[in-house]
Image (cartoon, rainbow, N blue to C red):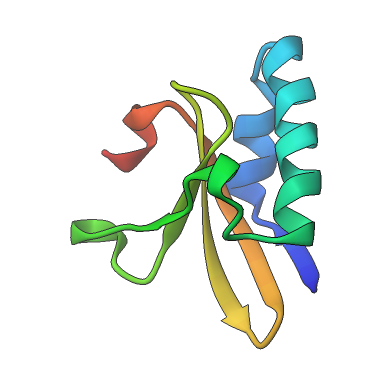
Length: 85
């Protein structure tokens, strides 16, 4: 699997608290092994985000991503539920 980070994701990630960054790295490792692992709670998004998916970093933070090719994934954004607005 190839994983890309959008400029929006990079900017949002850089603003996260250290503990969330650390947890994000742990969840990314799980994601790269199995992006539908139950721990991640991966789900399709709707409305303005049709075509995107999200998975949980913790109770408050999510990573929004999409499939841009076969085995090619782009992390689009990271943040609280406010990223859906």
